[in-house]
Length: 174
Ligand code: GDP
Ligand code: MG
Image (cartoon, rainbow, N blue to C red):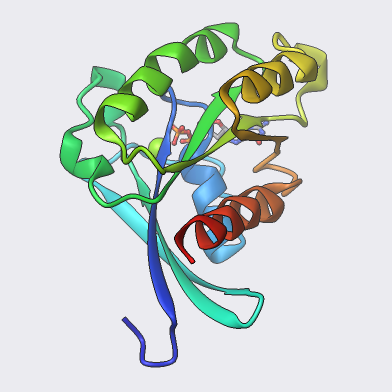
């Protein structure tokens, strides 16, 4: 950890393959959009320093690098994670329906105090929308977690979604 950093947080990205997790992360960590991201093997992660009130937080965000396709995310992926960004694709209903499975997995492997942020990505594709914004919000309210629709392509709400999660982690841990 950097000397000038007050906290190091680990957070994980989860959700079905193709929902845009890797592009959300590259937006947040490098402020760029990769149009064609290749699924690689192993875990990838990115860091970003964020100021939360008077503290400097180093957020370490883990990305699955494709194992979610084989439902092969292991417990070590979740170990020590204080936050999870659970992502679905608003243009693919099946990715919204998978959320039940992902929430179960989070409850099973994740810390009970883990902050969960639900994210409906690809909000730029409104003409292809299969999940209404109210459905996402409704589920989040039911689960007591925060919710935002984002577009990694247009860079809409990406910063906000990550910062909301990081701020909540800070609140829970301090
Ligand atoms: P992952 O499997 O969840 O990591 O998904 P990726 O980040 O690899 O993205 C899957 C595909 O969706 C890629 O072709 C991206 O270019 C595309 N994509 C990701 N985010 C968005 C978005 O916000 N809008 C649109 N239109 N496409 C996106
Ligand atoms: Mg990916």
